[in-house]
Image (tube, rainbow, N blue to C red; front, side):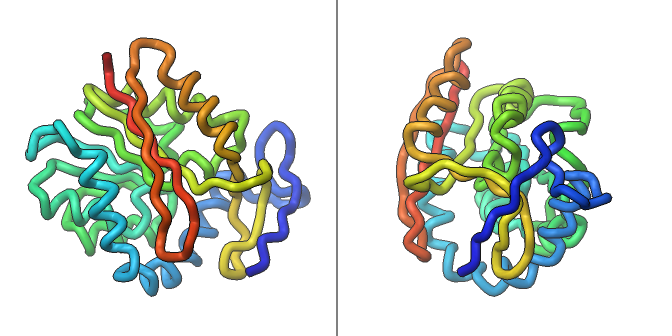
Length: 220
C-alpha cells in the first residue's frame, strides 16, 4: 500500500500549494474514504466490542457519551445498542450521514476543535482520532476532550517503529496522519494525565495486523 508522505506547512498542517484549509481537505478525504470504511465494517466488529468492553467498564449502562470523529458510526451504533445516551461529531458530511443512518443517534458535522458544547458527557470517546492532527496540536485536542468529560476520556492510535507526520495516501486518497512510536505516545499519555487524571492503557492487534495502543483517562 502506498503511504508516501508529503510535508505539511509548519503552522497550518496544510498541503503546500493547496487552496483548501486543513479542515476542508481532511473532511473531503474522509468523504471519499466512506466506501472503504463501509466495506471493512463487519470484519472489525469483534475488536470494536473488545475495545468497548474495556472502555465502558465501571460506567453506568445509560452513561452519556460523545463520540468524537465518529466516522461511519460503527462504535456509535454499538454504544446505542447497549443503551448508552451517545451522540457523535465528525468533520465529514458523508461519514456523519452514514453514522446517523447506522446508529439512529444525533451526529453533528463540524470541526471538533472549533465547536462549542453546552454540556459535559460521562465519556468522551475518540477512536483513531488524535493521530489525524499535526503533533503540535494534539495536546490541545486531548485537553478539549478532557474539558468535556465528567468521568472519562478515551483515545487511541496505531503504533509505528519510526515517527512521522504529513499528508499521505490511504487507499489512494490523501489524508493527514501523524505516526507515533510507542515511546512518543506514552509521553503524550503522561503529559495528558498530569493534572488529576488517572491513565490506563491496553494494546490490541486489529484484523489487518496493526498494533494499537488504547488509553483511558479517568478524573481522579
